[in-house]
Length: 295
Image (cartoon, rainbow, N blue to C red; front, side, top):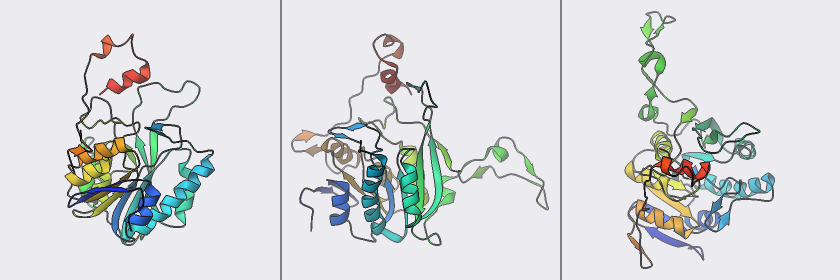
């Protein structure tokens, strides 16, 4: 039975649900039907998402909320399914400890980025966000390592020789990435930029989807935001399910996934961005506002 306040948009391979994540997970998504989940919930750091401020009374209360939808996500995964989850550095320990008894945590990943806007002056500024990579069965899960190999500087650039082998040979020129992933944050002048306070880069989702799913698999994002997960899944030949509570972001998803070009009489258009020379704005914008215009 469809949830009371849920609106569904779909085509042959992609579905978008306008509603609360937990409600949609419990009422709309069958158990054991999803190959890969990427969960990027509000971080409990006070950001504004249209009419919602992501701030709980305490980290403990936030963790309790996360446990509810995490339980639902775990039940939706297939036996060989994988879960990637992001949250703030201060709240991730709560979720890490909670998930250890329910899934196998195979990696604790650091998404590292440069931050050239306003930085902290009396502490160390934040330059990364944590990601947990979990599976239901560590003996049976998808991991397409060959699809995400990167340059290995030891072999490709430095051309060092491994003398430990019976026949000394040069180190490999490519390798599976480690657990520190340097991807730039999404900036205003990037083609993928949408109006959202915490948009994740397509390159980050591409790595996750390539390595932990196969063409035709079902990818679920319970906090879809700008629907980057769905857009990348579409490009890579996967199916996607996206859940989002804010109508403003639903419109972005409908456009990016090509589900419809109009909603309730409104034409769904990409953001009309104007580019101006940054040096002409130096006296008119704060450092934080200027950072939006950086490449």
